[in-house]
Image (cartoon, rainbow, N blue to C red):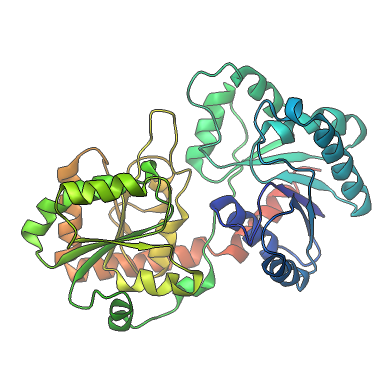
Length: 389
């Protein structure tokens, strides 16, 4: 079995789909994967990634035939590019003796290529869906998108939530094919909590924290609005926000509005070398994610598992894939993101009940170790793909 992973962006480019694709490819059998992605980014950093995969005998093709925009109008805007993309895809499939094509995320551009390629190639085309890429509002393009999706041979999803959302969109039952995100081994390491707190300047504080892209769906604003009530019970609390993103100005305004400058700290982008220390400086991970009106939500929420692997209890929203990432009452809590009192209650409980927080962290670490390591998930995916030949 030899897989061709087609993904718009790939490391060193940052992002959830990029990391998801990279870790699956890295952990699959040596020589079993080829990646087709867009040429971009710093050449030295790109070479590092490609060399790293090269050690596992996995090959990466970085090309210019994949446009920035992959929407419904993409082949109209870029007809020559689309023709070139189909030609490149065909040549790589033949040259590398590909048995399965995996689109690492959905797009009109990719799905249109099925029309000519399936006329001349007899191999399965599979797409991995991530939740936010499945329309939940009525768009004129939905009918076409649905028709194109039905041209695929299999549908993989990053969570049961995404699977159910895809079934609803397609209006039919589909085989359950879940390819969960995983956690890197580094998150399981032990680190000195006091040293980590010192690193981020919060040695004498009770720390609740969030790390990830600053998007509205993640609920940072709900935590900030809850802070005045939490401060009443825990005066030495601080909320660390790691990450950057489009919602940063609104969050900063909200902090100023509630006079919380001494209780909320924006830490900016957390580098890979510091991410484990950031988790270990915290006492409770909190991200009360929600589903927005346009359907945008967490398809899974790998960061909840990274917190659990770091022995930290996690609080998430009872929405999207977070319900699967957190085992409610065991590794943390799923709360109604729109009920501030529920969020406040769980945060205060875990920050003031150290034994319970430690027990949840311990159970979370065990659950992630047994179920969500990348090498285990890659083996499961390989086994699942044998059903499609």
